[in-house]
View 1: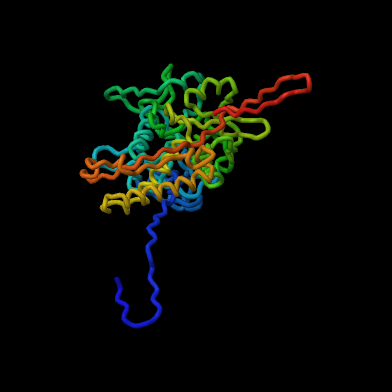
View 2: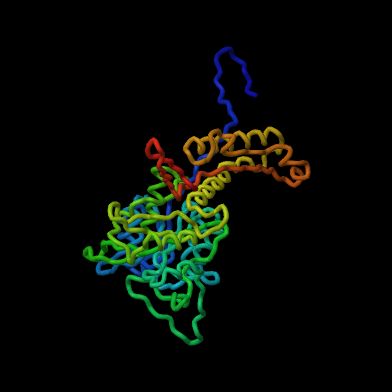
Length: 413
C-alpha cells in the first residue's frame, strides 16, 4: 500500500485481472525445395515477404525455374503475405540426417510457420516427412502435391509405399524443373496417396496446374499446386477466417490443369481424402475439395486448422498461469478468459450454435482439480467447442404439387 502523507489527489493504476487471449497467425507458410540458384543460403529458413525478395536471395542471371520458385510466385499471387523458404540445394531429403539440421528441421524454432509444403516432392518418403513434422509440432498443416501425371486415378485412393534402393544402385537425377527422383517414385500399380494422419494434419491435392513461367519468358508449364494453394489458405483466412474451408476458390494464375478431373472422378476421390482441382467452363480453375488425409472428426481442413489456432492461442496467452496460487480465484480467471476468447470466435461465425452455451463449454473448478491433482502442481481445464463444418453437399429437392412447383433447399454437412 502506498503512503498518503500530503492532502491531495492520488491516481493509481489498478489491474482488472482480465487477460486477453489473442488469436495466433494461421497463414505464414514455409516452402522446402531446390532454389533456381541452387547454392543460395542452403538449409537456412529465409523470411520472404514478396516475389522480389525471393529473387534477391535465390535467383541469379540465367537460372531456370524450379517447383520451389513456382510455389513462392503462386503463393504471393494468390494472396499469401509472408513465407519462409528453405533451399535444400542438391539434397534429396526433406529432413536432416544424424546431427545435421536440414529441410524441415530448420523450421522447428520458427513458431510463426503454420503451413508447410515441399512443392513437387511426391511419394511415401516425402509425404511421411511432411505429415510427421506437422504431427510432432501440432500447430502446422501440410499441403501435399500428387505426381504430375496420373494415368490411373484409382492409384490416388491407395496409400503410397516406398521401395528400397538396391545396393550399389544409383538414383535417377531430375531435371531443372523437377526435384530429384527418389526410391519411392510411383510406378506400376503402386499407390500414390499419402498415409493416414489420425489428427488430420495434412491435405492432398491433384492434379498439377498449368501456368506461365515467371522466369522463362512466359511459356506454359505444369507446376505443383501447393504454393498457389498456400496462398489461397492465406487469402481465405484474411477474408473470412481460418474457420472457412479454403475451397470454392479461383486459383489465380492457373490457366489449365495437367489432366482433366470429371465429376465422376471426384465421386471416387473425394471420400478417399483427395482434393480435386477442377476446370469449370465459366469460373476457370478452382479448388474443389476441403478434406484432410485424416479420419473421424478430422476430415475437414478448416476444422483441423481452427483447432490448431485455438489450442496454440490459449496455450500462449495463458502462460501467466504458471506458478500462480492454484485456488478458486485462479480457476475463475482461467474460465473467464477462455470464455471471452471463445465467445469472440462464436460471434465471428467460427463455432456452431445459436448461443455461446451451445457453441462451447469451459470447466475449471473443483471437479477438474480435485486435491490430488492440485497436490501434483497441476491445474486442469476442460474445453469443448463445436466447430462449423463446410456445406460440402448442397442438395436442392424439387417436386411438383397441384399448386405449382415446390422447392426445398437442404445443406448437408
